[in-house]
Image 1 (cartoon, rainbow, N blue to C red):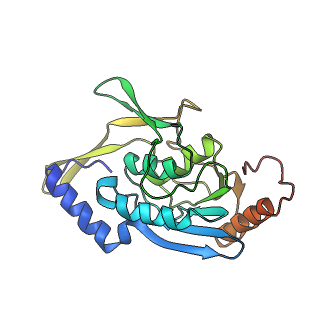
Image 2: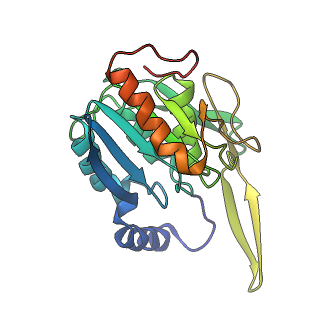
Length: 235
C-alpha cells in the first residue's frame, strides 16, 4: 500500500492505528463442521511489522484443520510482505517463488519467496485450500489469491476480482489535487504476467450468495475422498 504522504514513521503510526481498529486485518477465524477452518481477512493485509503477530495467531489456530477456506472477498489490498508471510504458512519449509515486483527505478524484478521459518504452526502444503474472491477483492488481496492459484496450492471460488496489479504512489500537488502514479508491476514466475485490468479469474464461478457454500462443498468432497470434477485444481 505505497503512499507518498508524510514520512515513514507517520505512515507506520497511521497504519498501526488502523490495524488496531480492525483486528489486524483478521476479521474472523472459525472452525466449521467437518474439520474445515474459515479465515476471513479484511479490510487489508497490513504490513508484517504491524500485524504479523495477529496473523501468526490466526494461522496457528487454523493449522490443525483438515481443510481451509481463505476468505478474501472483502480484502481491498495490502503489503506484498504480508502476502509472502501468509503464503509461507500454506507451504512447507522449502521456499517457493511468488510474484515479484518489476521496479521502474531499477529495471529489475525484486523476487519474493516463501519463508523457510515462520512463527507458530504451518497449515502446510498438502491439505486442501479454497480461496474466496469477489469483485471487491483488490491489489494485495488479488496477489495472494493469484499466487496461491498459479502455484497450484489452492482453488479459487467466486467472482472475477477488480484487477489492480500495479503498485502506485500518491503525490500531493496542492491542497485540492493529488497525483497517483504506478511505480512498479507484479510479475508472476509462473505466467510471466499479472492480473492488471483483467482481474483474477476464479477456478469455480459462483454467485455471491453461493460462494462459501460452493467452496465448502468442494472441500468436503475432497476430504471424503470423492472424485473431483476436472479442472477444479484442488489438491
